Image (cartoon, rainbow, N blue to C red; front, side, top):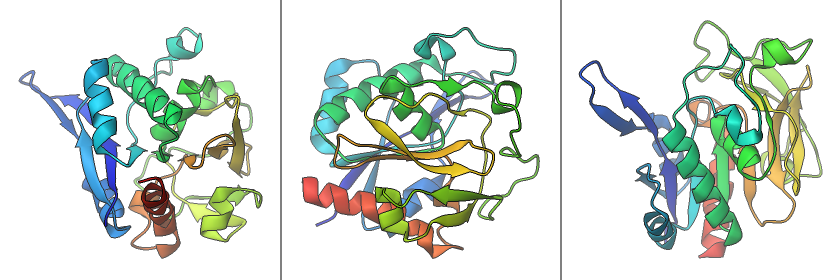
Length: 240
């Protein structure tokens, strides 16, 4: 038996005005390698359709992507805000809240970690370089891809530590936003040397975890990161 994991997607518009919903295949490959069946979930604002999605899947994977609208956490945008997809923000917040109410296993990567925190009532740094003094490099101009870029320290009393069995790891990095005030019912489970929050998890749910880096790009070179996806798949099997 393989768990079905719903995957959120990004929306792009080409020069001809056509919209495409898609995702980097490394996300799908990581889930497949973990023993799961990935299922891409089109963006929708329809409550009934979201409910139907949740009847089909055993867990959710919130993928990376654009900035999140600061209006959602009560702020006006600063000039450093990048591209926003309001329809995706709305969809993912509805999807998360409905899934969390069912105690469905959830993993969020990069933007996915941020949307989990915002949907649960937390806030973000709109731009870590403009808003947090002493921030190191988290969005290199070169592509680090599957290569490590900086260290993270992992809290031992956490699900993340239990799955990775390491209190420090080198990770990649592609972000300029990050978790600021953590949502009630969540705790920080990893952070960078400059204090940027790199992972969070719910203390009230069986498996809701967010990480700021991109293990889906690293697991082939550094196999330890596949354990994150395997943990999601196993949590889905226990829930099914």
